[in-house]
Amino acid sequence: MDPTENAAVYDRIAEHWASDAFEATNGVAQHERALRFAPGSGAALDVGCGANGRLIDLLRRHGYQVEGLDHSTRMLEFARRRHPEVTFHHADIRVWPFERRYAFISAWDSLWHVPLADQIAVLKRICDGLAPDGVLVFSAGGLDAPGEVTNPCHGQPLYHATPGVPQLLRAIEAAGCVCRHLEYDQLPEKHVYFVVQKAQAGA
Image (tube, rainbow, N blue to C red; front, side, top):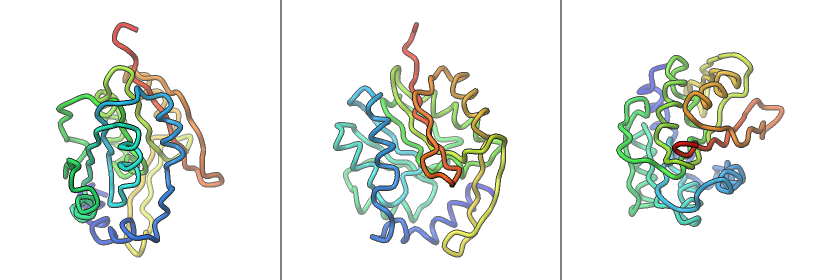
């Protein structure tokens, strides 16, 4: 599925993520773990920030100056209402120009919507967007091999894909980063998250 189509799907179902029905603790404990490795302050970016704002709130409580990025216009409408003081970018992460380096980047339940053929390149772009010692936390499908699927979500077709854990680990190393933590956190569902840290220059 083209990312523009996925963004249109999220436009149609954005209210679910903005409502009280959405689990407000989703991903928070995993981000708290990732933050233990992080520098502790600086610029942060929430890739696929969505409408909820819980991760932006968390990062701000930890002292980060946070920006959000999403491909869905409707999701960003909700996000801007919740956090009018935050800078949000309406963009496709495959081509969005990183104009600064970030101490912390979150890509929670978002990279798996990138077309399978583009995911490794996008992961590299995000890793390149980290400052030295910067930390990335992202989630993925925890398969051993590449896979992609389109399934209904709130009555709409939503695309997910994964290069597989072995390829993701190789891509992390190739991007000059180290995997600090990997966990299947929703077993028996094959949902995995990675905590990744950028190597210091000259290290």
